[in-house]
Image (cartoon, rainbow, N blue to C red; front, side, top):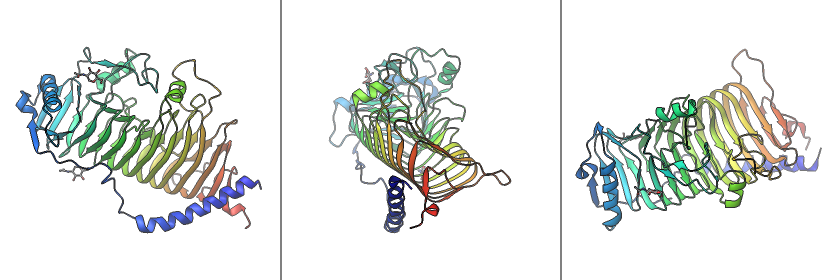
Length: 444
Ligand SMILES: *[C@@H]1O[C@H](CO)[C@@H](O)[C@H](O)[C@H]1NC(C)=O
Ligand SMILES: *[C@@H]1O[C@H](CO)[C@@H](O)[C@H](O)[C@H]1NC(C)=O
């Protein structure tokens, strides 16, 4: 046996032991609380003070922009809470400002207009070099924050409704001029809390923190039809200290996908995603439950996902990158996952996703190392796993432990498939490919 293989198994076993010890002290107690203080706002205003009408017909853009202008310029100590009472408030996109709480009462809906003709365009993200789906700029997110701090979006589970079907249809008919808007985007921002809100029918990705730090997203529900294109749930992108927990997400694309920029643009911008926690998440997706990638050119370090429950999902856990991406993906830990009715349990692959243009460097190979996936139970899993490294940049130190992925009853056991990967496997069933040295094959 190769020396590397032995060491992988030893570190793999050590990881299992450490994990068992840790799970005693940490069980059930950990939350995102405290990462961002929950500010109390004594100054409160209502959107109706600015003439908004919640009849689902009146366009309230002016009210939203004036209310936020008032918060921005009449700076009250401790910030201001903007109250959205029950009702359906139709509006065009708008910007948030620092030191504010957007509070949606029970039965409050902030609804995006379906008239896309005047939708504002903004510059592409430097780490993408262009819009993600079309060259050039991109449509501003429906609710947007740029360069902000201390922003809270919360309430009594009111709804932010993107009415995305006009956008999905433009995508289907190939009539989109620019990249579709996210539902909520924070860019270059810090100290953000999003909690107790329902997000519905986003035109594109739902919640997109990019170049952000200290972001808490909890008690959210994110819904979009399974056939809605690219409606990712939450995409932490070139961001650090993002904590996502206690949420339900069912959309048409990845539920959570950690990203950090696209090929030569992402490499040049060089902003990683670090310290991303995801816990107690339930949902379903035709694509991935928990994903890293595929745009990871700034690197992704320290992703910790646990207590994930997935139903009717394409790929349970998907770590994905490509040549031309560069970027190091390392220290990824996913544990305590239950999945039922999934096409693939675990996929780690170096051939996923498209390129921004022809100028990507095919020699910019990504690195994938130190991945821990443990305590996974899957039922009705069509294919347990696929690990496909790159010939000139094999994935290393990939450690799987205590993984049981069952097919549908009566279905034959489909084997794992691997290439260009090294690591270890302890108590994995069906038994993984020989590239991952199994403890059962060792004799120490
Ligand atoms: C909203 O923010 C974007 C991006 O920062 C900016 O281009 C735009 O002018 C702002 N719109 C308003 C109405 O303030
Ligand atoms: C809002 O939804 C969350 C998460 O689904 C739930 O825990 C909470 O009790 C709800 N709150 C209200 C006020 O309905």
